[in-house]
Image 1 (cartoon, helix red, strand yellow):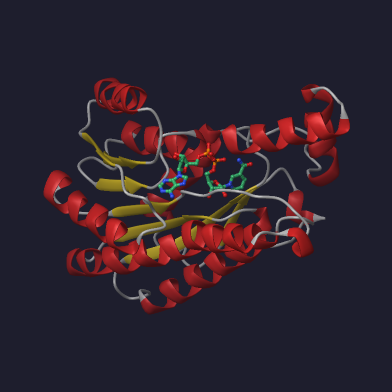
Image 2: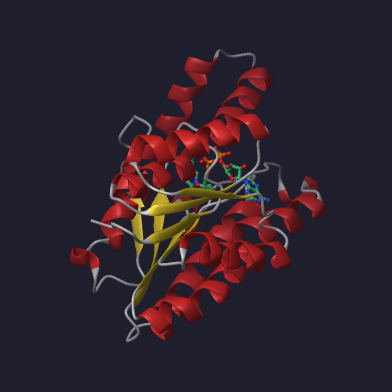
Length: 260
Ligand code: NAD
């Protein structure tokens, strides 16, 4: 159990991050949620999570693309949850276009959120974890951290980069009681993917169900989406005693995507 541990999950107002926050809370961890959205909906998620799992749940509105806000968020974990034992770098965005048409601002934004944000959060979290002699850092990479797809240059570069960050942290922290691993999901049906499905359906004049089947058939031998709950279960495993000597790995939860 993760009773009394303090966990920060970036980008946990939606999708995979919310699934991870719920899975950690179900194990007894207190949670610092983060992410954008409607203030009323976020407060309902915060209070609902606290009530459902009987844990403390706080919220940080930090923009992960802003290093000073990321540092303040880690400090907030200390003041509101008494420390930071588990850091899940999950916040991420997507933008698709061929390289020659890819706006430079989108490149900068994706690198800032999907890669640099994880560096700044990890840097801020490490001293407290080392002092306690226990910590878990989990980076939500992607199958796109291991292999590429067309039209996702910034995302694929950021996700490959986060696996590099994961490995360096694992080596530096190897004898400190702190592990650092990545989870590499394949397709998970979240708002991030829903938008890609809708854009493609509109461009090709197809219906959403047909595009879902097409996306799965193109990349995933197992033709079903993974769920945020399943990614949450992988995160819980990486926090467990059984995973104590697992560090620096990409844990694929991808229906066979990178087995091909
Ligand atoms: P999502 O859009 O449902 O959730 C993204 C979350 O990040 C939201 O809570 C959003 O508010 C937050 N966020 C976005 N920009 C932020 C910023 N600047 N500061 C703080 N929070 C910010 O997306 P998701 O599919 O759940 O994606 C979560 C992570 O999983 C991402 O890193 C994504 O790359 C990764 N991933 C997703 C899939 C998939 O199929 N959905 C597959 C592999 C990896």
